[in-house]
Image 1 (cartoon, one colour):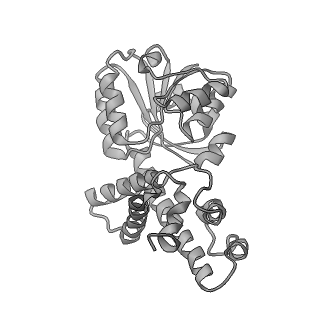
Image 2 (image 1 turned 120 degrees about the horizontal axis):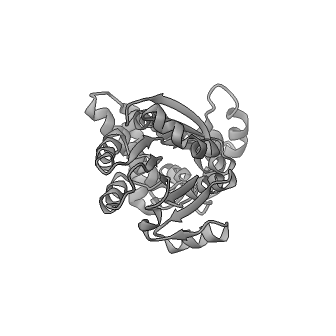
Length: 285
């Protein structure tokens, strides 16, 4: 397949590499010069010009925010009828539904397919993909999706994939903040948090977030960035907005969102999301 991949960030680039590894032709679109250089170094041609995607059979979108998705769709006025867009960003149900209507008016078929699993699973092609949309559209883009991970068809309604991702990000947000608080508690109890992490992560209180982010929480503020604090400010905010729209009470999510927002406010926004622990132990404590 001829695939254009828009958004070659920390998770987007390894996803694009998996598509190429599966034998498909891939052109990347990335505004960041460093991102384009990184993609080229790994064998993917990349440009800052969205028009490189006009002739692609499939356009995979991995931008960061609803506003970026809206801007992309607004300028993409030369879309090729019959083209399939796979929106894999976490942008919330409302945004993907709104933009899919605009794209449909130009003859573009949309598949709503957000992912979970983070950079580690993106690098191994083992992401979990929540795909919603017409069966025919999902089947058309399935070769590209299967290169990136396990595809779960979750319904014909555009936005259902995003809605499931909202639930997923509720859990991720709460679990990540809970892990940070627990390791801070261990330190306050005069315990070695590394030893505590090793003991509890495989017990009943363990979580994927504790096992994945816990070690980086203990590495210090300059640990490598796989997902920024600001991404979780955005994602937990999307969860809060979706909950408000359906009158769902999410008090634990609200607490988690406050922690990520606080971390961003004290200058940790572009640090790894594990650095939310500094709102207990660092200058924000």
